[in-house]
Amino acid sequence: MVGLDDVRPPGPTSLNGVRIDRALAEQEVLDTEPLRFALEDGDEGLTDAPPLLLGLDHARERGQELLAGIHKEEMPIQAQVAGVALGLITGEDGRYAILTDIQGVEDFLGDMDLKIAGSERGITALQMDLKVHGLPFEVLSQAFAQARQGRLYILQAMNAVISRPRPELSPYAPRIVKMRIDPEKIGAVIGPGGKTIRSIIEASGAEIEVEDDGSVYITTPNVEGARIAIRMIEQLAREPKVGDVYLGKVVRIMPYGAFVNILPNRDGMVHISELDENRVARVEDVVQVGDEINVMITQIDPDGKISLSRRAVLTGEKPDRAAARKQAWSPGAGRRRERELERRRPLRRPGR
Image 1 (cartoon, rainbow, N blue to C red):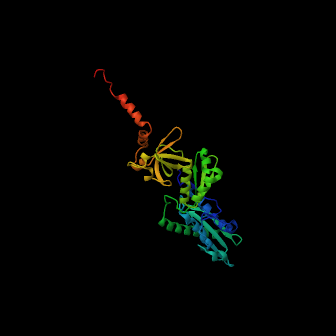
Image 2: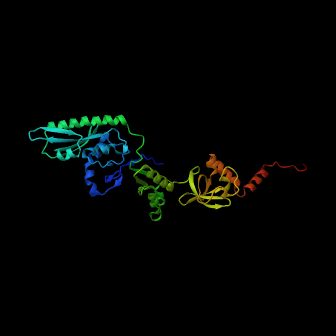
Image 3: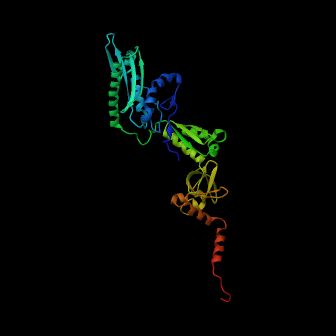
């Protein structure tokens, strides 16, 4: 079984998990590059389960973009990361003012746009635009000091609400799930002319890539789509075993039992005695063609025929008990019992 923790981020040409037109989004993506480096940097970076890094709310105030992106989607990271934007207003007489948490107006009219992101341990990313030729050291030093003060203030507020990652990703977080199947099952997953894999994509809303070594990458905008795709692929690649329980569909009814489809192109037979805990007079009294029922595999013959039991699921029986019951109902079982009784009957001596 694959877990949903095995994820990686979709491509960088996405906003909120939806592919967007590059010409329209180019500036927005470029402005969010500090966010990518802030979250990926070294020991302060993302864990093994990074989701979409560039999932920003389309914040119009430039100075809020970085902070908006960091808060988006509740992603698991090893340390809290916050950011702040700073501006600069300079006068002809050498006086200057450094502004913290600038918005669009200050960015447009000011002489500097400095974005700094980091954790309590230090800076993890920064980006700066200047409209003046160079900055004195004391101006830059003061800007970094103000950024640290603002960053620590934000981190304190964040920690008051949530100080550690939640156990699971947000259900709305885009993700790529990696799973592995037997390479011999690739054909079953893809299907003739790609029919099967297209049906999985349609049902789950996921993008699916299958590699020659059996690696399968499932890209989905939410957790539910990933679960649907994983379940369908596992069913296709799964090798049935005695004791496995399936939700199957009744495809054919005979007087002696019902045939149930449990896997693509794999049917099994539920004997009439295994349809219910009580005696069943007619198969149609319990199931009809098209019904979905839970069944357990109780026996797989050498020729691949599968015996199923609904009764074992209802009662919680072990598959070997249901298999033994099948043997008792099989043709010739009565004659075998008579021969066994005859063999065990003590011999009579002549004259008695």
